[in-house]
Image (cartoon, rainbow, N blue to C red; front, side, top):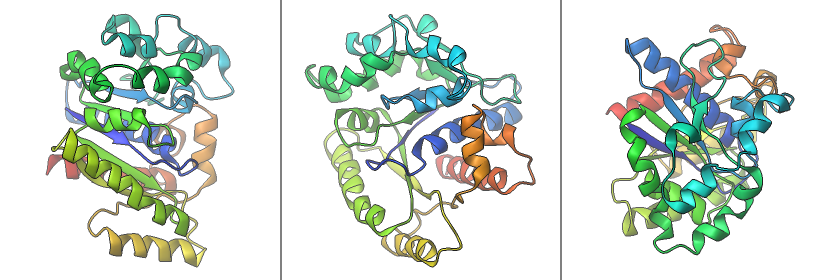
Length: 277
């Protein structure tokens, strides 16, 4: 099994979209490869809970996602306790829409997620709390995809410590490229102090506008600074946002011949290939 932490301290870079569709794509891949596939778990650590909302019907379907994000005995409480009733804490999402094997998610609580970084920081050995919490369920899942908040506080650090791999979505512009150095500094610190086995799968250029020269130049600059780490890019296409608003993964919302389907499929295949190798 593989735990993949999707990380960027900058908001608006397509991190949640990558997390949701990576989880859906890996679930579809497992279903095609195995007669009795293990499920994929999508863990939403961003207090905005956008990944959970998308996976549970979309932002316009509050009747579906509200019961998942307003639970009393929820993920943040269980994490702080260090254990929980996982059978009751975890439920099926609605993605992939076209598959009977759904991505799993934690029942959570929006208000308690806002408080979580402060409460977690006060615990002894707070950085390793998430790793210990996930340990009892590792054998049940093929992959765990962690969508992190846009910060480098205790939550993303705990996520990196719990993970074998990290994936960095980035909108290719000068400011984002400058920010890559602080992201990799955090990753290297976690490797040095807590998790020497942590590997960077790659950097995913996201929300790319190919008609703008500076975007393609930025991708080339990332290639030069981080050789062998740049994965296939994802264009800024209207279908991607429409899929999010509809509470669907891109693989169910579009056809296999469409650009967004093929682009996300390339990313999923690249992730699988790098994990397998």
